[in-house]
Length: 120
Image 1 (tube, rainbow, N blue to C red):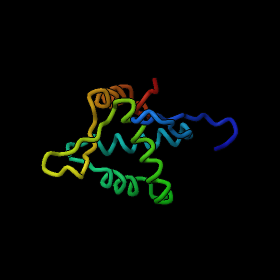
Image 2 (cartoon, one colour):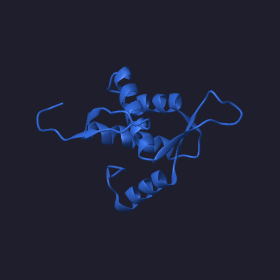
Image 3 (tube, one colour):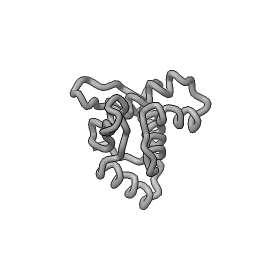
C-alpha cells in the first residue's frame, strides 16, 4: 500500500481480527461480489472466484482469490451476505445476499454510485 492511501480494517464473522486492505481494492472486490450475487442463480464460493477471474483479468489468480475471500468474510460479518448449506448437499455452501445486502445494491443503483457499500 502507498503512503497516505486510505485503508479499511475488514471484519470477520468469527470475531477474529480482519486484514488491512486498501479502500480502493476493497471497493473493487466488493463491487465484483455484489455484481455476481445480484442474479437469481445459486452461487458457491468457487463460482464467485471463477467469475471474479473473468471480471478482473489483469490480476494474479491467487491475489484475486485472497482478496475475494477476505471481502466475503467482511460482508458476512456485516450481515450483507450469508453462506447457506442446501438441504440436499451439506458440504457445499451457497452464498446469498441478505435483505440489508439487497438494500445496499438498490440504494447504489438509485444513487448511481460506483461503490456498493458505505461502511458503518
